[in-house]
Length: 264
Picture 1: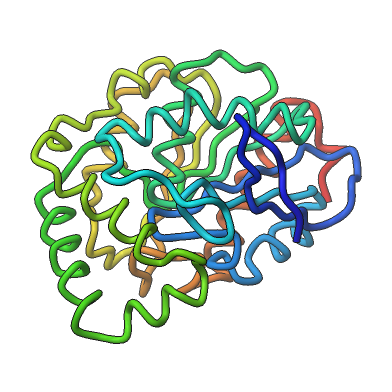
Picture 2: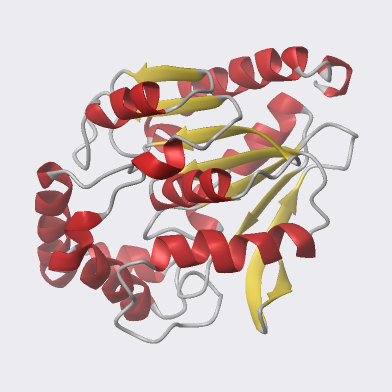
C-alpha cells in the first residue's frame, strides 16, 4: 500500500499488476468503499486483462484523510472535476480505462462528460447513478437505520480509519433534499468514448432505468450487461460473470482502437 499526493492531501493508493504496455485501468470505488472494499477484484482484473490496475481511496474513505461534514451536495462533481484530474496526473496516466462502481461510476461519468481527455479510451460503469430514483433514497434510509442497529458499522470500520466520517458524509449528501436535482444526462450527452454499463439483476439501489438513460442520452456506443443473481455489487456477488463482461468489452475496445497487441 502506498499514497499519492493530490491537492495537498495524501490519498491511500495501490497498484496491481506490472506495467506491460497495455492500457491502464483506474478504479473508482463506491460511496462507502475504499481500496480494501474492492477485495481481490483489482488483482483479478489485472490478471485477466494484462493491464496494470490502480485503485485509490477518496478523501473521507479508507486510510485517506477525513473530510469536513456535511459534504456539499455536488461532492461527486467536485471529485470528478477538482480531484480526479490530479489523480490521473499524479500516477502518470497516459492511456486507459476508468472503471467505477456506484458513486465511482458517477464520478467517471462526470469526468468523461466534462473533459475531452484523449487518454481515456473507454468507461466501465458498474451500477452507475445517472439520476436519483426513489428506490435509491429509500434504500439509503434503510441503510442509515442499519448503521445504528446492526453490525454494519463494525463491518465498515474494517475498511475506514474514520468510519463515521465516511458514512455520514455519504448519507447526509444523498438524503439532502437538494440532492434530488442530481442528473448526469448533460454529462452523458458529451461523452465520446465507448461505455459498458453493468447492472445487478436485483440491485436495491437503482433500476434498469439507469441503463436506459445512458443508451438514450449518449452518442457513443453503450453496451449493457445485466448480471443474474447479483445485487448492487456484481463484482462481489458474481465476480466471474462481471469479470467476463469487463474483459470481453475491453477486448472489443482494444481491437477497435487497434491496440489488441497490448491486451492479454
